[in-house]
Amino acid sequence: MGSGLPERVLPYPPGAFPTLRIVTVRTFWAFFAAAATLALVARSAAQPGDQLVADERLFTVMAALNVAGYDEGLSAEADSPVRKAVRRDLESMDPGMRSRLRTFYKQHEQANPDHNLSQYISFALMCGEAPFFDLKAEVPTDLPTDVRPIRGLSSLLREFYEVADVEGLWQRYAGAYEDAMLRYQEPLIETVFETNGYLRIPASSPEVRSFRVYFDLLAAPGSINMRSYGGDVKIVVHSSSQVRDEEIRAAYLLHLLDRMSIRHAELVARKEQLSRMAIYAPALDDSYKSNFQLLLTKSLAHAVQTRMRYEAEDRKLGRIAEHARHGFILAPYFFEKLAEYESQPETFRKYYETLVGDINVRQEMARIQQVKFAERQAPARPRPRQAARPQVSETERLLSRAEGLLQLNELAQARDIYQRVVLEGGSGRFQASYGLGRIALDEADPDLALEHFAAASEDGGDTRIQAMSHIYMGRIQDVLGNRELAVGHYQSALDTGDTSPVIRAFGEQGLAEPFTGVEEDEEE
Image (cartoon, rainbow, N blue to C red; front, top):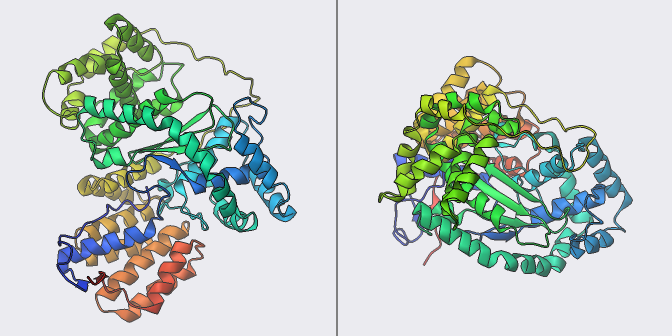
């Protein structure tokens, strides 16, 4: 998620300039935007092409939770021996550190065990690398709603990482994680191969290579956590006696389809009247009822998975009917329409517009009215109360959508949404101005970028937006030759009080030397 700016590749062949690579005018501003972005986003533990990942961030967060009082699933038969060993290793840890972790955990504990764990999984996937664990999101709506209340965990993890020698623990148990990943190697290869074949997507595509399956051995066994961040679906597999290949297949399919729904958001929105029909499905999770784009994508994923199954047609139709009964109201339409897709030569990416555009809202409403929706099943175990889910406002939803479009380099659509939020005049206007500044910079208009960043820097509620606006303005002024103005902005960034190591590094670097916009290459 991060900054929402796409990575740029400069249009020069390797070695074109032996010592310096110099870019000018429009190309320069594109490079400038990329340079800021690449420094903003901490490197992931996974390298390009790595799809099975053992992640030190996730290990650190879960080790801290086990110290803090997270005991869910300890007596389960499938609980990993690694978890018990790590807990023993941490028994003699500094009492003060243990107490601070316990206090934080108690303050943010949720009654629903799944939601309680989920917020920390989200945090681990969003934060930067050890030893800082700084949240990578530049703007508030880049953070999942469950992460926002626990943003303060970063500083606590930095201390825990050093006090508990987590780096040493991680190295000690890395072999066990490698063994867990080996079990999933062949199922993942099969999943990717079959799904790519059906959707006609080349294995070398960026969306294929960016899919990640993370492994955890320190949480309660048998569960699966799945996240979608701006079109990137990540799945976390916890200790289990069985290989969870069906869940991985579903996650991979969503990873590919989610990006298409974001890219065609306006087309999807034209069919949103159908979302009213899903309200009456008791078994459908509220997250689908409030997000038609998500509901459409999941309905399509169910239809694709069902068509890919090696079984009789009547069994497939039975599965589709069951998905519809559980609220995935467009699964029957997509199941039928995919038969047309299979008989024509276009790739799924190109056919997607036809697939969604041909939805006849009136006909589908009539079809859905014939569905007898399934009742919501009682929870498997009694829970005293359901944890409240954070409510997402309309402004937050618009900003999240704009950030996703910006990440996909759909600048015109992102601009329209940001301008709408600015005109509404609420607190979201600062983040919207920040987004407009990045778009202006991407389009080689530094004067307009300065205007938008200046408006964004007035946000008194979010120090990250305030600080990064000053960093951008400082770098622009440096490039324009206004060193005194640039220094003022770098100092203002540091004065916001934002504790992020990224902000501190940017500010101090800017004070030490001007940003030049010249990228150094290694001499050959």
